[in-house]
Image 1 (cartoon, rainbow, N blue to C red):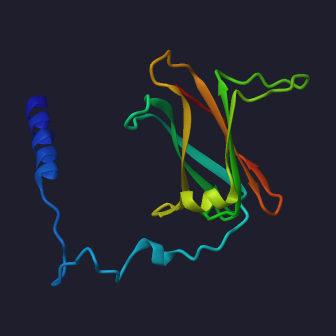
Image 2 (image 1 turned 60 degrees about the vertical axis):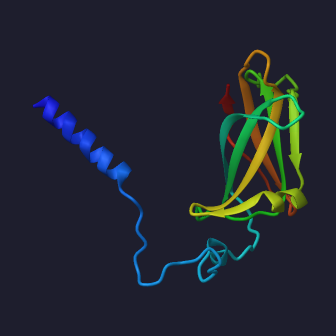
Length: 173
């Protein structure tokens, strides 16, 4: 019985993978057809964020004539009071720590590396998505030829209106 169930599962999976995509409707869309695009849904009105969320992905950047650089790609979302991802106007600062920062009341903690994205730069990192407004950033960390260390990243947003919102620390390897 288990073999039949496993075989049926594999066949169902293969049929889903092997099936092609179909466009419904009488007229095929061309690549130059601008009748619908996600950017039409966006009114790029800046809002005041209440929270921010960053999704980090370790990666290696390789460029011709340059040594490979290990770093972190990030997708940053800013949320308003209704939990909607919104565009913002201000700067993003990402503090990077080797290992985990020691947070104590009597200690002054300094980041090992700090990355700033100005308000002007942030507009270039903006991208609308199905989840809402988001910003894509790259944090270069070190040469990709050495020991992989644990890194903690903490994003902080400073709005032009004085708003300060800090994201949760993320441990990455």
